[in-house]
Length: 487
Image (tube, rainbow, N blue to C red; front, side, top):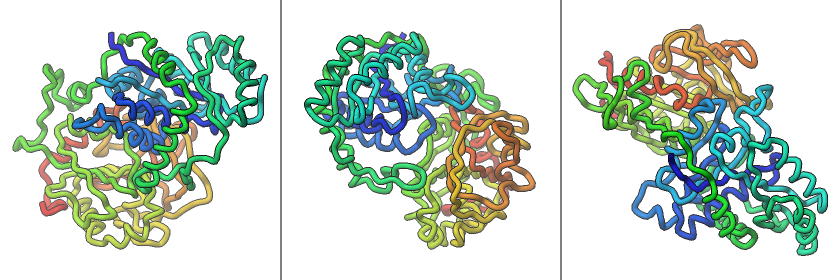
């Protein structure tokens, strides 16, 4: 049994202020010296960046590795992994704050409660604090809160934070209405000009692109929450959460027991996959253009035997020395297409690495970067495809099967993923597709070409740890030709 003080911050609907309150709470508690663990329900990559920034000011983190924002997605990872992943991310913390997604009971389309905030709260046995946009109501707020609190008796709606309150009189009316609801009010935030957090075609601009301004925004959110919320009451509520019976997720255990792994790993022994005992270098794209990745991906690659080395394709002209494999996740290459194109030396290195047959895993932004061009700007030319911005937003969960063998998956491997982009690639799939999508529609998607696996589909590797084992195994296999970064 593991005890972790925890809160889930939810709302009746999107736009109610969950991110404002959750991020502000994380920052406010961190400023008080608490070691705060940040989490986000769903597949979103952008909010966790702000969460990580919010907790980085904690004196409790001094001299320790920063806590990344982590996702808890019951569709991508399966309900059985939610509590273990949570315990892994929250290990040693004083408080965990989980920001919900959409409305409290909104989940994967057509699949009931699956992947909803309510579903995750139940899996975590965590109290829920409902953030209510009170801007256009007074007494009706009691009916709204009563409905959400009583809809599912297994969901413990244990408090309310009123957002966008117009005045002292408005707050008084709201509190009076809620007096008899049995759901205490833990705060009221005034309707003020929104803290500056610019958005564009896929939501908020990531922290990596505006760090100085983001620091100011997070500090302003913390101040609003300190002034308007009962932090002591919220902390006491978090500490009322019961112990969890699950064991923390362990990347070393997962890779050791995955197909192709070394079997049970007593004492946390890591697999050794390189013939010479050296850990193969896996270059991991980052920086402002490639900000979308789940923290568990790098942890699994490391556990499978790789030396993971981050690099920034906007700034560095060479791959890390000794690069044996390359992972390029999601992000916004369309915003930085001219700068990425101008870095000809790196584009040539990536193309050269691909030509050796080295394993390259590319998701969404990585797919665009490997194409011949992006909005007319030359890219790496690894794939026979052209990419461009589109008017249409593609967004949603997907179920897929590996059409053939690749550096990530054996033929027939079934995965769950999600798409999130406003670009298009022509053609959408190569002669050897990366995936065959089976739900919600059937179509071929992406490319397998030599050692390259490139696709729009984002997959959470915690659900398929064998992908890390397979990828690192390919990195450690001898190949003809030369690799990148001075190999």
